Structure formats: structure tokens, C-alpha cells
Image (tube, rainbow, N blue to C red):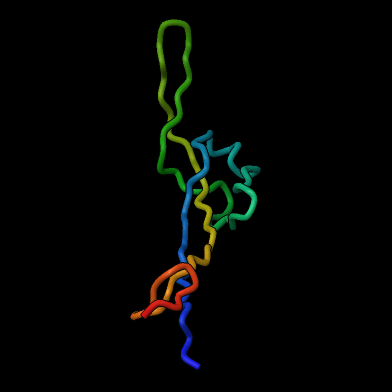
Length: 86
């Protein structure tokens, strides 16, 4: 019995919103995602504050989050919704 369905594992990585690093300890990933950075996250972004007529930009932090999806796919040589086609 040859396997006709060969699911692909997909890794989806997202980043949380850029916030002041001191506030980023509490930041959670979206439901279903795993936080792969720790502490205050990674200082690789900028956030903005509007003060009267000026917009100031500051270095901020964000976390990286990961989710693993199973992507249903047919094995090589098979096709169709049930992977029965050859």
C-alpha cells in the first residue's frame, strides 16, 4: 500500500508589534504561535510617538513567533482531492 498523501510541514514566522523594549516582556504571541525570542525580544524595529507637531521615532523591540502547519499534499505522481489520480 503506497502512501498517496505526503503532507508538507510549513513553518510560519510572524513578528509582534514594535513597542518600547521595557514593555515587551509582557508581549504574547497570537494564539497557536510559540514565542521563539525571550526576555524583551529583539531590538530591530522603530515605533513612533506624535508630540504636538513632531513625530519622534525610537528603537523598539518585538518578539518572533512560530507556528507549524500541516499542508496536505499528494505524493509525487498522485493528484486530485483524494490523491487517487495517477
